[in-house]
Length: 296
Image 1 (cartoon, rainbow, N blue to C red):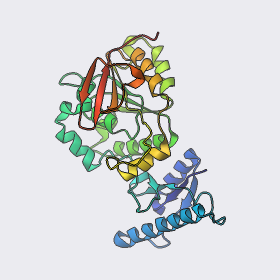
Image 2 (image 1 turned 180 degrees about the vertical axis):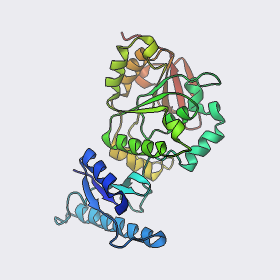
Image 3 (image 1 turned 135 degrees about the vertical axis):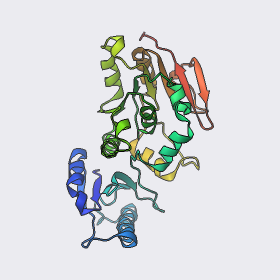
Image 4 (image 1 turned 120 degrees about the vertical axis):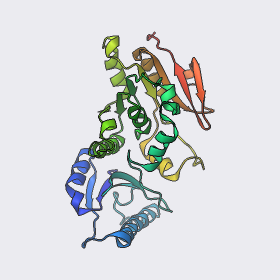
């Protein structure tokens, strides 16, 4: 089933069409006939999404008139804030997009007191130490951004085309921001499979490899949880899980020259059954630290 990409602002139609072509999505002009702003603009968008929700209900009820693209439970949108994934459940959750200027992300960086942020400590960042990091499962890029904001050079790897498109769009907007451009310059994004990238890194001399490999694999959530926001639960449902997470650990340990860091739910079993040499526990998650080890 092809996703539809609804462009909500005519001014961004060209960028939206390029995104649709890259993703194999169906471009739909979703902007109003007359320019709207403020409350009227929001009302127009609510009506658009309400119509799509109705088509989903009709399709689920067996209405043969519902087009297959209209009956998809998620759509892409492109508006003045860039590209986003919009799920069409009721009540309508917020769109999922990559926004490195997001206030909550900026607060997390500020409140984490720099290198005191948990992911930074796990990856070995401290005053005078900014290791080269390979984030092999980049997702929406928030941890990579935090590391780059503290001076680390970070390579992000994302194999899911939809997620890569969201990341690339967010990175493009960050590069155009005077406030964010410095951090964005320290980020490189690869559209590739993590195993392929790691195997290619194995062929490099140690001084050219990442010092740290960071893994935050996505695992299936079989039930909705109060601890998982509705928009992120739907995002995980669309994107799927990283079924090769166990295999990634062995490759990562062979590539990293200093450490491998694995982010896990606090009570989850060890990845691949391998006990880490150190654990850093948080309220709902933990970081497992592994030493480098050659492939057996």
